[in-house]
Image 1 (cartoon, rainbow, N blue to C red):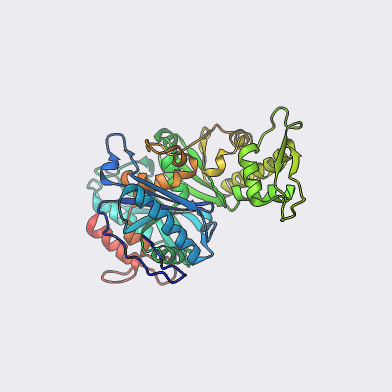
Image 2: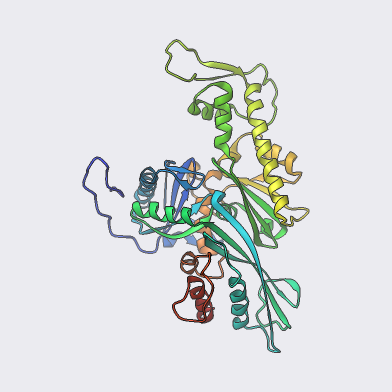
Length: 443
């Protein structure tokens, strides 16, 4: 079944009947587009694990660092990935939850405080605190995709998990607001709709990857989940069980590949193969005597393969990876986010599989580092169970088990955060006003 009209003029085949109760994730990466499908019986509430019914992925086309650069190519690749997952699951989708790399995203901390009466704190008091925080949300040309509670406080005492039924004079709330560029948001919506699918949510990829790769203890004690993708490297910082900051660096595994191709005058495909089979970010024994080969550029039939010592390859890879970690470390310092002294680092994403990356991260960050892959997703085939699929698995895990936004996804996605989005008293005012009305009526 084709999800897009063939440019050669083939007649479009309509969709089959949609299978109810499905949860699907679509990961728009720079190297691959992947789709996971979960059927209702695949959720295991006892241990909060999932059993994926369908997996599909194709080489990414029409995308770069989360931007759509070729709408037709991207929509066709999306359709192909989804079709493969549907065929494996024997199901038909109506909508997907899309994870997007962090290149176009930004996180903002918003604080609010409301006074209390003499009665214990109620749902109405929580609603007032959230309303006060939302009233400060003003980010021109940005679209909100997450509103996550960082912490509650009562009379200045922080670390409160659930303030209801406590007594105090003031209630404080700190919200993490994650936004995406308005144009990127609209382009993603349009691209997915061209594949005849509905965007049910847009999820920040570093958050999704962290949900899949981190243990509960790591979130509680403090950790940094670094998702190493092809076009960008992102960081999700956790403290006291909550996401407190998201950051992104527009350097990834594809830049390492390009460095190899330039340095050795080989093709990008040859450079990727060299990186995968022989690449390393740390020195190894006998690397000066070990030779590696790569195809030359061009179509000269008389040109032989390029042969260099493996130490040359390592000399190209290591500086780029080290620079990436150093730049990310400085970005995190500049953000002002407070990292716990013993906070560890978890590396995930496709580029984290390069040999020696963990050891280099230990040297740069001076913190314990481990490699992470999707947790609580047993029974996946080896090809889809690695770090490269953390975001795809994390979207489904988050949908089922949290962390939850303080406002429903549909309300969040409809809210514009630019000028003119100020809350109004009631009725059909701005989308932010509608979010507050929902809080008032439903929390």
